[in-house]
Image (cartoon, rainbow, N blue to C red; front, side, top):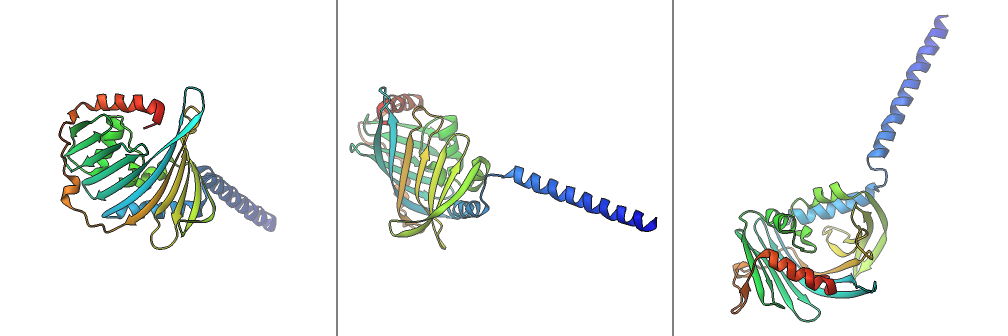
Amino acid sequence: MRRMKWMLSVLLIVGLLQTALAAAATEKDATNPLIDEEAMAILMKMADFLSQAKSFSVTIETGYDVVQETGQEIEFGAVRKMIVQRPDRARIEITHRDGSQAEFIFDGKQIYIFNARDNVYGTVEKPGTIDQAVTYFTEDLDMRLPLSELCLTDLPKLLGDHVRVLNYIDTAVIDGVTCDHLAARTDTVDFQVWIEQGAKPLPRRTLINYKNAAGEPDFWAQFEDWDLSPKISESAFTIKPPEGAEQISFAALKQIKSEAGEKKGE
């Protein structure tokens, strides 16, 4: 009888342990069931590396599809030159394929944007960091600034909070650089990113599909000429509107961009 009681106790303990382990495994799987751990480690390494850089500059060639009234997708593009000097300096120069230019500058005190096509500019006071300026510009003012996430120090949290699915695809060579190719999904976009292998895990290419937008248009970017210790003149962040340019409100600038976006997605 004692032996039987002992065996029943052992079986009960084993059963409880198995149930607990199964529950723990289920809970772990339910937390991130569709995220590949290797891919997430690579993505976070890139995000941490960029967010901790004291300064950097990069040239980005971009292309984007715009769905026309006929339903046809037409590609437009631009070259963006981004300069970041943390904590409170950023400049983005944009040259569209038609030759027209635009600028975004944050000097630690105010945000400035210039649209050469319409020869207009706007400024708004916003003392603080690059993170605060970009968040205010994109969320409070509801203005578009593609790839501005690269400027943010909270890039790791941003990706960690929004990525729902993540897979490692393969290795690929982008402009002679061996990269890890990842594919991810968020609630609003699907994106792929090619991240340089080694000590400098920099993004070399990205492709974003706006799956919730009409026609599910794509946006792609190729990153070139990364410099993690650029020589930056303070004049790069000097706000000086061109002579003859008209100052208008950000609401008016947004309207201009909205009207242009119907044709060119700017």
